[in-house]
Image (cartoon, rainbow over all chains, first blue to last red; front, side, top):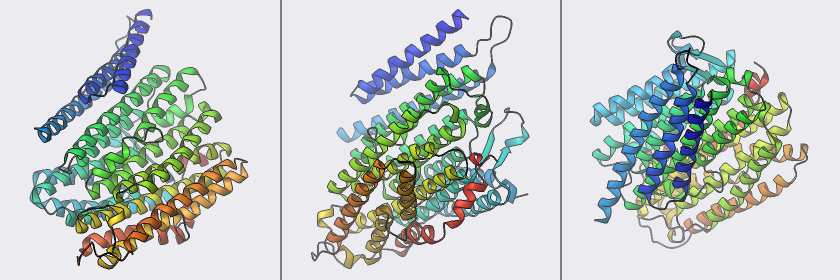
Amino acid sequence: MLQELLYGLAGLAVFVIGLRGALLHDNWLLRLLSLNVCGAGVFITFVAIAYRGLTLPADPVPHALVLTGIVVAVSAMAMALALGRRLRSYDD
Amino acid sequence: MMINDAIVWLIAIPLLASLLSLVFPKKGTAIAIAGSILGLLASVALVYQVYQSGPITHELGGWKDGLGIVLRVDAMSALFIVMTMLVVTMVGFYASAYFTDAHKKAQFWPLWLMMVVALIALLASGDLFNLYVTLELLGLSAVGLTALSDNRAAVQAAIRYLGIGLLGSLVFLMGVALIYTAYGVLDLAMLATVVEAEPAAQLALALMTAGLLIKSALFPMHFWLPAAHANAPAPVSAALSALVVKVSVYLIIRLWFDVFSPVLQPTASFMLGVLGALAVVWGSWQALRAERLKLMAAYSTVAQLGYLFIFIPLVMAFPVGEERNTALAAFLLLALTHAFAKSALFLSSGVVLQRAGHDRIAELGGTARALPLTIFVIALAGVALIGLPPSGSFLGKWYLISSAVQTGQWWWIVVIAMGSLLAAGYMFRILGHAFGPDESIGKVMAKGSEEIPALILALTATVVLGFGSAWMWDFVNLASPLAGN
């Protein structure tokens, strides 16, 4: 129980750190990196809440959700980087 | 039966069309138009089905008890779906004439149809995680469409839009994680039966609402909207303003009143109402000061979304039952009217922009002579945005005012009156310039395929919804979960 709580709270902490960066940075690249950190926080929380004690196997639902979430986050980030390159090409 | 699976077809057809238009880029326009028309017919069948037999639940693939994906449609989602399909079909006709470059068309259709899939799937989703996935799908396709305008400002707006969208989704997802920790369910109907007024549920609702507020651009989170909506290509701006922001508002209403009703606090709903009121005043004021037609239309969206949020404290004030359903029907009427009027306005702005080569309001002199039908459509859209009779928003605002009196919340009336006055100001300013004597815009011709879809949308907002919306009040009463069905 304590372990689950620790992991969950760590996830929340990472989420808040990422959120702070995403809101405060002016540079779009830093903002994207912060969003990645923020996303990692959400995913850690999901992994932590799947824990159901030593006797039971982990709850598969949050794990399935995390996988979907990671796929979405990766594709969004790829798109952001592609747009960033487009933006650079206008400046050159 | 085909007709009983209308909701499945509504998602499958645009999805298939999107993939086909990617594989056969040269046939993209034909595929998209055919897909949109089929989808529009299916959405009418869906409304008929819900009208006849009440809210529907469809378990995809027959997986029971929350194992598979559940689709649910009630009066509110059915009306939003038919609105989406009508706007998408009309804007699709317009877009087939707007984009002249074959390469641009090949990029446009797959993204456009994917946006339609995301919109419909979001409106029909019955559980929290699918809502997150469809929100992301919608955000990504909308960003791709915004970036289709090949200029620096549009790409910059697209990156900002993407960042904001991701932020909103992640905050929403954190709320979903909390809900799963506390209750172990994601299905909306099951959640509604177990949720209680406790800190975990309150925090989760606060997080999900915050994520959705960013996406629905409620004041003061509206800062990203004008740039994104004003710089996107005209058909995209129309869909972004009319549909994409509106489904987030839909989702807030759905979560607040159908799922989390035991958790709600009057203070929180009052806060949302106040932000809505500020959005009405600030958005209308900025629209009045805007120098460009599309920027004015984008600020007007900020203002019009504000009215929808003023409904929240008013709906809260009514007990569950017929009175609350009537308030909800008025909300729907205002949302639908805005969708049709704003898409018509953006399409007409696109025609002006393409023919005159600019959309600076002060230099629009002579446009009324060169493009009479387009200016007529702008005037019709103005009737609906101001809320003059016989538009649907006249009825919606009328109801908004009378329920403010009924529940003793008179201060909203001041805001509504101010917003309508400012809206009259910004619409008449355009018409004043358009009827001006200058000859800055020469002899030009607009294609019927561009002006007629805009005209149909504007007429739907003013005449059809004004005179033909009586059945909507019964419909919401008969087929909404709030009615206890």
